[in-house]
View 1: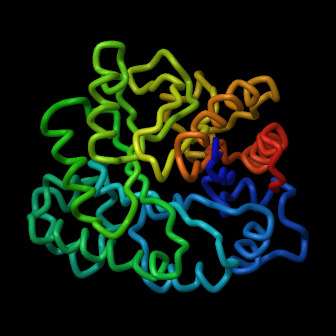
View 2 (view 1 turned 45 degrees about the horizontal axis):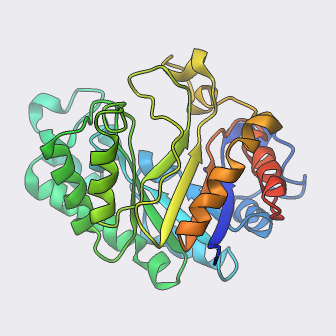
Length: 304
């Protein structure tokens, strides 16, 4: 049996706690360019989390290409406006901020449904074009659409997933759910069949259980070319608690035994998909980079 390639990395190389307290970067590595070059010398893949908060730019995409070796892979997290999350108005492209209806301009957040269709169309197009250099360089792995808790299973939700794929025809779109409705015992087969029929990768997750936003740690392949696993930690106490920084929510250091639970699952994914992306999202201090290295050892892969 041919086993597909497994790429292990983290969901950020710029988290402040990693830069300041993680001990991952040598003292002489001080600039943004140096940090990415150093990270890319240790890991084959990274997830860009910043594009969720602010849409990507073509200029940054070109810099990422220049600062990483041939074969390095970037997974890009989709902009919050496009995943139906609350979006800070000042994160919109400046020339589109005037398109926000007057009744929403003073609000802390704006939503896709509140913007004119023409403005949303422009956001989609600029998002697509900004990633094209990465795609052309062969360094764009997938665009991750992480949907919110209120994005529950329905015909309209499925239609929007299809729209996301159609909007980015040149790129690989992967889907992560944060609503238990998609993977409940009643709906699990329906969800996986929907994704498999459209060859959309299902993002497997390790995350705190017992919440309406919890998805069980199921290993499933719904596209033959790509499987993906994201580790969010198991910090139940902080999972649905508001904190000043996202890293507090994902502050969890996996024990070796917990990582070992995923070894047979990841190997099964690799037997069914040509490439499997494994991303540690517990980006607090050096937790993610260290756990990625430990998981690599368990899988007989040298990373970190």
